[in-house]
Length: 160
Image 1 (cartoon, one colour):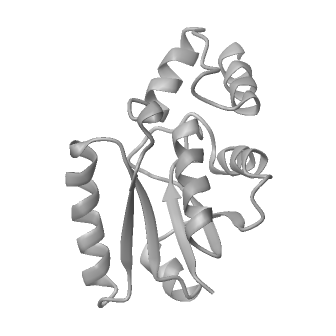
Image 2 (cartoon, one colour):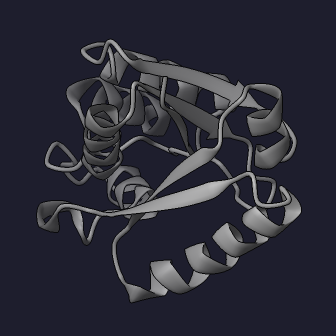
């Protein structure tokens, strides 16, 4: 059985993320979407809220499992017999950053981890969670960027 993990902060999940999840689910028998608590980022939603949004928005995928974890990705992968990381790329600047991480993960895992890069579909190449958060913060319509469920969660968050 081929298994891969798609890690990220997903704060919030966007149509760009779902594009990568859908395409990965067609390539692998099982995709684990790993919601990370990135201490370097100031998150809008807590890990469990982000996990809930992903579970809701990936209901139609039989081979997608959503989890959250702390610690190093390569440690989680080793403990769960996963050897492939899926990452989405929007632009060359993403590649430079992701390449460094991919090479570090491969080295730290003693060659047991590979990274597969998927370029984001052109209609989502501009899209990022930070753009969505900024628009939502000021009441701009984000329905072209996120599923309805996520849009409602954003509206609730910024009403507070």
